[in-house]
Image (cartoon, rainbow, N blue to C red; front, side, top):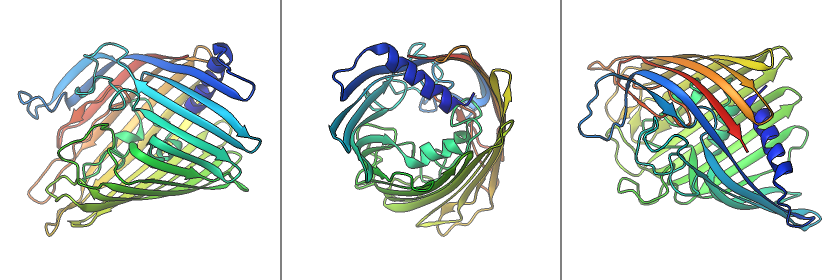
Length: 391
């Protein structure tokens, strides 16, 4: 069973059981999930902001809260304003399902999302011209990348471990946007368009940061085609005045595009995606490609993927040779009920070391609630066994 289908069924079951209808044309639902896993990582460093911890490869074993979905709690609702117009809203926060010492990078008291009710918090209108939403939202890049991922943006094998959405030289977190407006059209003949804009993005952070540029403005544009078991999509984004790391100055512009596809063949699902990023004031570029498959196995689903990350970006006028990282991953998910999932996954990343002409890569295996950090030139490994329940 696909993860997205399981989440939809879980949400529907919760809605049917909550009995929170306010009126015939208005609904209110309290929902959430708790996800606990036992995981082991090696070739990584944990809590990199600790001044006493240097870039020495370590191994860590413990419990995490978010091997699939990230533990969360939220409220959502909808009200029909007119026969052709509906208002909806959502506010969602993360929480630490196994306590504050779970396997994460530290510094986030809610363990997921960047602050209280900051995983997402938006209000929107849905009508014949499409859907308009305003508030803190997941980016189109993050949502659509999961559609071209055999692991559907979850588990230790997620494409996010090597994608440019979270591993770009500009130091940007492209998973969420604050102060965001988004608009999506209804699908017409399988085709649809999306757009997102924010005058002041904050990424995962919900508060001000001294490293933020004055005006990190973002545009994201997307288009897709869906027909039966086929999905094709393309996104383009422009991150203006982003804080740029790796020696670049504040105020540079970073551009990223991605293409994604999935095809269901009954007994086999195929996935593919590619990304490319470049920045003003920098030489070279970043690229990523990932291929995967999903295979029904009993009541559950077997997942596997292989992905490659290529990086030759450096502050101008310096030029560097390409650095490479490769990820191979395998996983299995098994629904125990419409709202309960048991899963296991493992991933291995090979990082290329630094040389006088090459920056190297430091990508690490991780998941929604298990965030660890890699070391340049060191291979990263992870294995996880967990249980997730939505309510």
